[in-house]
Image (tube, rainbow, N blue to C red; front, side):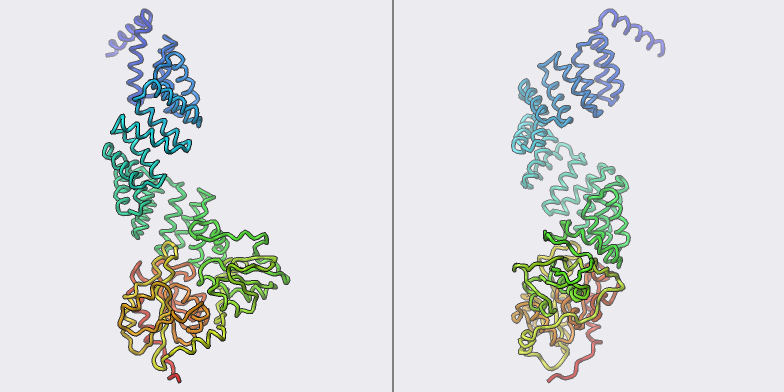
Length: 609
C-alpha cells in the first residue's frame, strides 16, 4: 500500500512537470470531493496548490471564496470570488456567490447587483432568485422579495427554502393562513427539518392554534433535541394551555442547552410564580437580568414575585418598572414636575393620581392621609366612578379628563408605598379609611331591605377586559355558586355590574340585583352599609368592602395577585377580610364549600326594624 502511494506521488510529480493543466483537473476534482465531504482545510490546500500550477484557475479561486464564506471570512471570500470573475465573468454562480459574500458584509445594494447580474446570465437560476429575495427582504422590500421567492418556486416547485422564506414574508404582512400553507408545503419536501417545524409552530401559535403549534414544537425537539428555541417555544405554548409542569420541563431543557437564554429564565419565572413558587421564580428573574440587563419584563415580573412573597423592600422599588412593561398597559404621565419619592414636602402641593383599576385606587387611597401628614397639600386625581367617594377624604379631588391645578410634585397612587417605605410589617391597615357620602346613603336607605336573615352581597366576575396573564381566572362561573343559593336563612344581593348580571336570570333563587341602583362606587359603598357580609372574587367590590371595614370573604384563584401574598387566610391589607384560595388551579368547588361553612359560622344579626 505504501509503495503504491509513493508510486502515485511520483506519477503526480511527473504529470505536474509535463502537464500542469491536466494535473489541475485531477487536483480540483479531489478538492471538490473534499469540500463535499466537509474537509474544508484539505480542499483549501488543494486549491492553493492548483493556483501555484495555474494562477488563473478560476474554479479554484471560486472554491476558495466559497470556503472562506463558509468559515465567515467574508473579506477573503469577496476577494477570491472577484478574482475568479475577472477571469470568467460569464459564470452565473460566481456572481451569485459574490452576492452572498457581499450580503454577509452588510453591503445589500452591491449584493443585489450581483444577484441581478447572475440572473442576467442565467434567468432560470432558482438559487439566485432566492438569494435576491433574501437581500430585498433585508432591504425592507417585502413585495419584491415575495415575487422573487415565487419565481424560485416556479423554477423549482420543491424548493423548501423558498417556500419557508415566502411564508415568513407573508406572515410578516399578517397573511397567516397563506404562510401556514407554505410552511406545510416546505415540510412536504423536508419532513425532517426541525427548523421548519419550529417556524410553523410559531405561526400557528400566533394564530392562537396552540394544540397544533405544540405538535410541531414536539416534532422539532424530537428531530433536533439540541434546538433550544423549540424547547423554549414549546414551554410557552404549554404554559398558555395551563400545562404548567410540562412548561417548566421544557424551559429547563432550553436552559440546559443555552444557559444564557434570558427570555427562557424570565418565562420560567412566570410559570413558577403561577405554581405559587415566587421565591424560586425570583432566582430566574435575576438570571434573566444578569444575561440581559435591559429585559424590562424581568424586572417587572420579579417585582410581582417579590411583593407576593412579602419582600416589600425590594418589590416596591422594582415595581416602578411597570411603566416600561408591555404587560401592565399603563400610560406614562409625562409631567414636568418630579415624582415624589419621600422627599420633605414642607407644604408643597402634590398630585396623587390613579393609574390602574378601581380596585387599585381604592386600595391605595389609604395613603392620602399619610402624604398629608408628611407635609403635602394633596391634589387627588381619580376615575370618574371614584370621584364622590374619594372626595370624602377632604382633599382637593379631580376626576380624569378635567384640567389639573398647579402642583410641585406628583406621585402615582401605587408608588406611594415606595415613597413612604412600606414593609410587610408596616402596611397601613386601619379600617375603615373611606367614608360614604350622605346623599348616597339616603338613596341606598330607600331600597327594600329585608328585616330577616343574613344580608349577603355577592360579586362573582371581574372586568372582562382585565388582561393580567395568570390572573384571568379570577372570575368564578356563576353555576358553581349554587351551594350558596340553597341557604334559606340568607338574603342574597348582587353587587355585580356589567354583562355578568345577565346570569342572575339563570337561577330560580331570589337574588336582589343592586346594579340598577348604582351610578358610581359611592352608591355601591352605601349599599354595603346595609349588608352584613360581602362574598366576592378579586375585584373592586372586595377592595371596597375591605376599605369600609365590612366583613368580606374573598375567593381567590390558585395563583392569585401579589397583593394577597401566599398561604394567608387573612388579608394583610384588610383586617376584616378572609381569603379563600383554590387548592389546585381551576378548582373552585372547595372554595365555595369553605365560604358556605364560613357563612354558617357568621353570627346572625339582631332583628332589624
